[in-house]
Length: 272
Ligand SMILES: C[S@@+](CC[C@H](N)C(=O)[O-])C[C@H]1O[C@@H](n2cnc3c(N)ncnc32)[C@H](O)[C@@H]1O
Image (cartoon, rainbow, N blue to C red):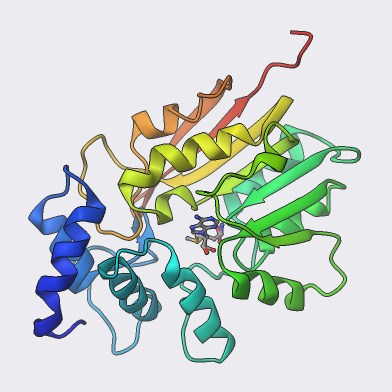
């Protein structure tokens, strides 16, 4: 927990980053409690007990510092770099592909041979490695160079082309270039005012005839945020159908512990 003298600076900067709809409670939650999570904090219930050293402690600390400095993404590099030295925990590192991806991919698209896939915000590579097993020509990127290096070290025989790149930058070489784009919990890791830009960027990667898979923490429109992350609202999820994409299916998935969504979109083939 940040000490009291830092709170006003953190809260001031966090207010700007959270945007107009943030409540004082949201900002305090970010600055003081700051629990990260997947719709709920990364594994924790809001208001639940904190342990001496829970899995979210390092991400909370680094996110609060980075956001207070006006840098919405710098904390990812610091978190992965510290984790590489055994000094921090990456709370979303489950060492397995996301279960909602594993459930979807085998029946959704069949063989990936001859098809290109882009994995957005790939972290330590489990989802990219899983997708590549289906024969996809796989590119995976993350804003953190350390994450990319760690993924390459974890999977030295990988066929995945891991790259360091920023979703918020102009990535023109990948525009309309992929048959499948996999976005899992990256947009939500960014402050709310950056979501529209990030969503447009993700949608823009899908090529003619291609599919976009989005898996994210979800919340009601205007619902509370215990940031980071900033779970996606129904209108944000629907807005992936921009840049010429068409919605295929939006699943609202709720269990007692979390609220998530899995959504798919496609870009009509040129002949359609
Ligand atoms: C919550 S983690 C999810 C990681 C992975 N997709 C997973 O599901 O385990 C968000 C990831 O997005 C990456 N990220 C955040 N902002 C990014 C950006 N602007 N461009 C590319 N990657 C970004 C972070 O470094 C981090 O690896």
